[in-house]
Length: 440
Image (cartoon, rainbow, N blue to C red; front, side, top):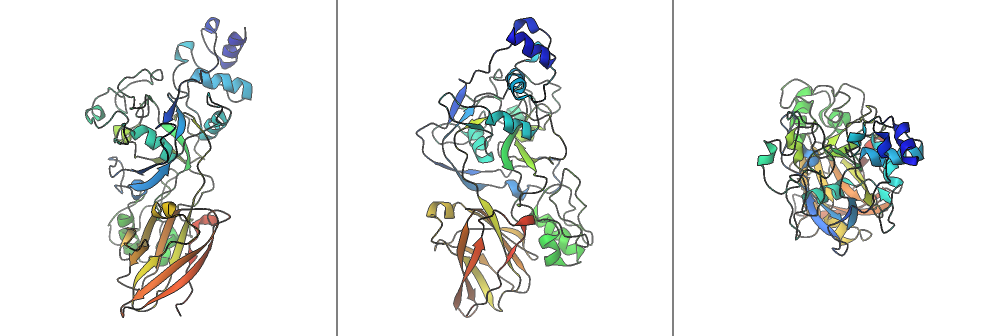
């Protein structure tokens, strides 16, 4: 009777067949419980053909670490979701009984609530996977090998409908039934069926910027702004390389390109936005095949209720949060040739080497900053006239004294201890912290 009642509440057909509790046994370790922390390079240099600025800097390869975790082998089904929704008094979907094993499509807030109510067979709490966790699961090809697609490196499936994508005219399938879309760990549908929510807010690349710092760097020079957008390669919607024309104003779903410098200042990306901007990964029946690439990432404005995205749950303690700091060198001392960001004693060596650091100025646009032989992130400064923004992604949320040294053309160097208070998370609006100290 309980099963029939649940199905009646859900508006289902075929109630006589009942509904069962979700089977929690189909949970897979990624990559294995004794693997230790996995360091890998996530992201992709590929792009989808509808991106106006491509490849997007926000998804270029970047180093990350992931501790072993457990993940659902399949997407959450309509049946599993309905069992929870009745108990939680959440919104009940309407579905025919023969669709009970199709993936549930919900908003990210509902997906979070569902996963937080679950636990793994060994009692670990449920949650949505992080982007880095999801991508590791999708790319794991065995023996620490990574592949671009969940099924490996076979590109023919991008152009067939073995894993249906946009244009195939296919409906979603029952979860875990497509032998062409399973990874080396036995996890299904990370390539297709439905795209899937991940826990992270969407954070564009550190140098993809709105009116800040573009306005500070370029003033009212629209040519400078459009060229900077072309270099930064941020979200689609800009007009790259168009002399004398500012990039187009972003729409609701393309919020992270350059703004007209005459417009009011907008928050820099990489801050947690209000409303928060969720992110999904993977391809699906309504998504272009290029999204089968596990390094792709897509933002969706939370103000636009999106219910064509599926999800699965991860289990175990969530990774420690990190924040991004932005340093603004508004006016460098005359003759400065290089800036060195040196490892603070309060940051472990492994974390320091895994940071993502990007510089941005009006001359070069966005450019990656790498570790040098002295374990410092070094930024060459061919000119000292223009302001320079340096974004450091992956820092711990606490107060840090960051050693900075400046070299000049005479071969001399001076040092600054710049105080960063990240204990409250990222600054409101992603504001850059001006490095105003002078060298002695």
